[in-house]
Image: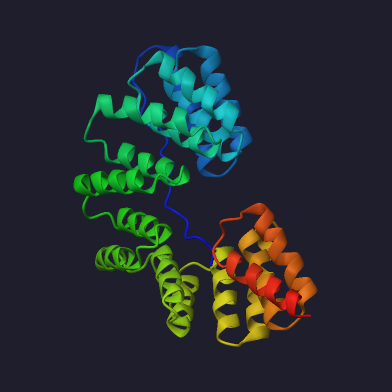
Length: 316
């Protein structure tokens, strides 16, 4: 099955600016506001141009550095985004939004330890910063330090106990650890708070699948798709469940749809191998399953199907 994705931080622009009677302050503020409007409209290049204008007027304008970093982050220019966040932090070393977003950018760039350093700084500023604990949970999950991730999410929950997303992330980590009962308990709490989140139902489907309840898994992932039709990995999961329910063509259709959205989705490549195995096309099954294995040897179901393929080959 495809791993459930964790929730991430939402973007939060710095919209407020100091009001000053000087024309210099007015001009840089207007450029910041124009940049923010362009960013909201999705015109990242235009937004960056306005932030550049604001910084030309005031090279110490931390909000312009921060918002330009946000625009570059959305362009997936992570190194440039980190540089802008760092400029803002150099101007104000207790600038919490920039520290949070730099931690997220470090995480996305694979610099997990740098992300943890920013989190430590955030917690020194405010040891009740729920978002800092949340990011720590994301980083620890990425590092497969699952106990530490659970501890971080639990601390975030203590600060904001009504946040369903935190329970879903906690449930996801329990699922990764194979503790399905704990995952279900966290999902039930999340459902009490907000049953309209698609990731909740997708993760429920994964737990049902692990328990062999394939029809329930299908029903849950259908609800996830009803709530959010744009997540390609939901379709891949549904394809897998359909295979186990003997709906071979329906399953293959969903898996291929997922691969069209992301040709490097190795969970979908694995599932295509499972389809061919179930259809008795062992050469194709071996190709796809081994491709998935090369990408992620620890992917669930791979060892099971590799053993079946080797057993089948030995019997020929």
